[in-house]
Image 1 (cartoon, rainbow, N blue to C red):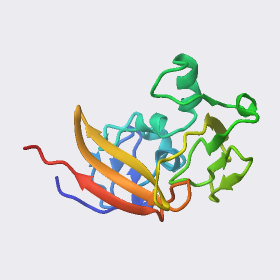
Image 2: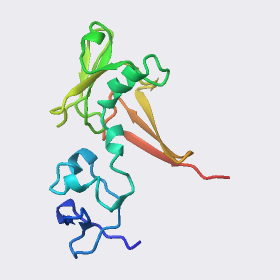
Image 3: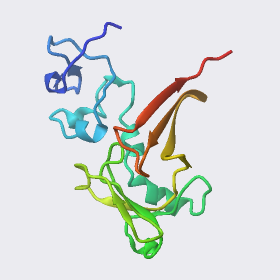
Image 4: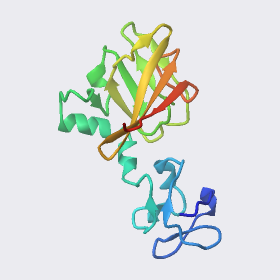
Length: 186
């Protein structure tokens, strides 16, 4: 494929939901660094699902990036070992440590933690107008003075990448230390 860099404001769409670039060439495949919840608010947003344009990260991924799925998963699979208790209301967590997270958020923005001792740790940001979920607190492992978070990338059934983020506070941010790794099959 011939690659073009295109600003979101330069995307056009026709009545058949085909996306076009600024030279009126159809966009057949697109990779974006722009959150899906922002994409659906663009003037072309209503065409995202019906467009013949293929996405490297498909639109259905917006379901997975929305933390509102967490209470639903908990309701469907209570006590599952890979889930933390989660709710749309705070009352199940009255008096116990928990996290408050906006439906949409990036890198810890607008996340707050209520700890055992009643201390609240909060991160500022521009998210939260859509609503919040509440989730049981699971402390990050701490090594020395830093808290560590692992992120992984899986393509198909293969683990292809891993990142390690470290932060001096228990909420990981976009300024946290970041070390990427990739895997090579031997």
